[in-house]
Length: 88
Image 1 (cartoon, rainbow, N blue to C red):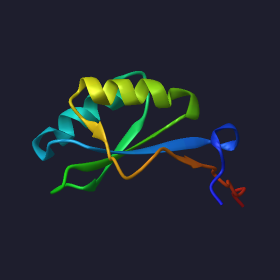
Image 2 (cartoon, one colour; image 1 turned 90 degrees about the horizontal axis):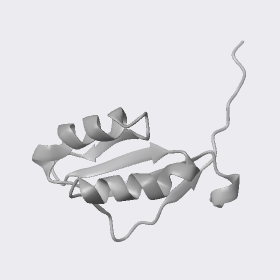
Image 3 (spheres, rainbow, N blue to C red; image 1 turned 45 degrees about the horizontal axis):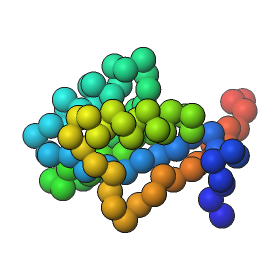
């Protein structure tokens, strides 16, 4: 069961970008006050994932749109909880 927004620790957004713009988009998003972390899922397709705080989802979506990227149509925001185990 996926947690809802209120119970989530982070949100993952899958989005598409032109493959030749992946590095640029990654650097811009990550430089925006650490708004989100971006990773490449599939370089050939230009599929990327942005992980951010639930409160930042709307801001990340707006920024991606301004950079010419779009959320992947088949996916919605994935709310995640992190289970941290103590270090021994």
